Length: 377
Image (cartoon, rainbow, N blue to C red; front, side, top):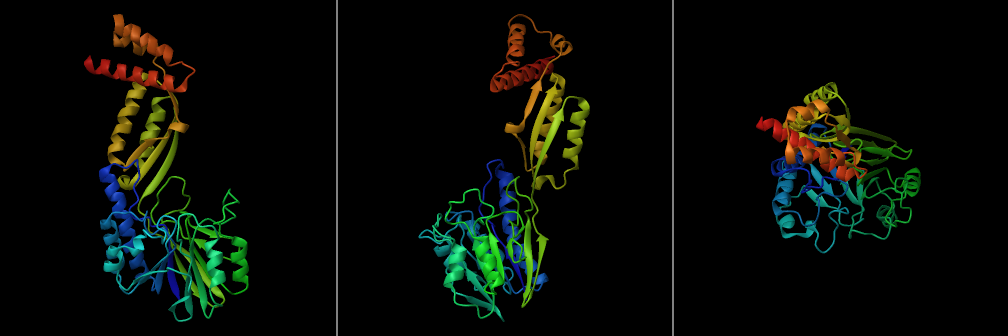
């Protein structure tokens, strides 16, 4: 028996660094991933799909997002999607899963696990959900679901959401999931697979090979280690096989550049040129070093060019320290006199300020003055 384990779709998510057109493509990619997961289930001959929490970004998403998500799942009616509410979309009074749109448009192949009652889903297989009913639970919901369910009459899959205690720095959080108790239940043959959501990187937890985070099917941030996957799980008595399958299309890339010469700028251009599928790639650059006014002008033109072709191009301010140092030859070619020349002298002094913010402002102003003067010549 095979099924797909996925989580953290967070449909309706917005990213502050994406403009309107790029945000639309990002949103559509997440809906497309739902349809692709359904088709993968058909291709892999999987019996069903479990979605371990955070199906939606919140309980207040646009109705159109919900309608498109349900349409995407409806595209493969032979595949049943079992959804568990997570911390983003808890099963509270305002739950999206209780909205009129969800109730009216949901087809029979979409099932919400609203409690921890064991649910037979295939011959010899049952699901036990651990849904969030608020944004701040006061207990380990997965352990609570395991304890509340009757002894297993079949192979049991726990579908939950949240952080494991072995990964959290806050040991006082009552909602942390106990990995030790989960593994004890696995050893006692009470649980046969634990499908978790919340961690966006695909991760095999513990030592049993039966506790997994699937990761998010589409990346959402630079810090994620292995996103863009779902898990194809094959389960039978005494045997389990878990295989990641890549479904994500977007990429988040960080890159540190040490700039002090035209050759360094050439290298940055080559790195940016080599990026594939730029319209679905988000880049954050850390710029460190010192450049001349001419080099800064060239760098600005380069970044403007790639900002137009990439989904987004950001500068990592906290890890950037790029100093613009005009040389005497560059200053002399500007031909400034009077007030303009005095202003340039003041800016060169301020560029050496011990106040980093003031120094950066002066360097940027010097570069702008250089660019404007050159364009007027």
